[in-house]
Image (tube, rainbow, N blue to C red):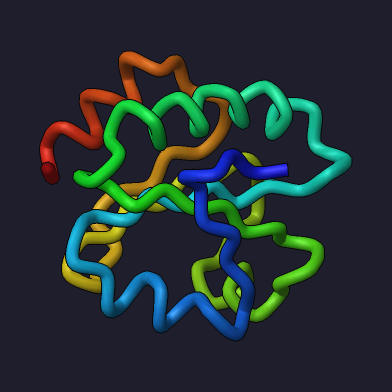
Length: 109
């Protein structure tokens, strides 16, 4: 489902992929049944292409990876979390327009 420059995260790979990342990490928490998640997916994929080499963009299916979802108290999807240096810096809940997400990312690149 994810584009080639979007990393698919799991409960098992989350800490390695996010904590050890050399650049900011934007994570899209989603589920197959979620309509707004399907609407935000092309925006996330476009951001992955636009920020390639500057931001790691990832997706995490909340139904398949409940541990990370619980850890970050994900109660509504889509939720986008932005990490830098392994720390949670920003949270965006719900469908957001691309320019708003670009502003968010630009603060950390």
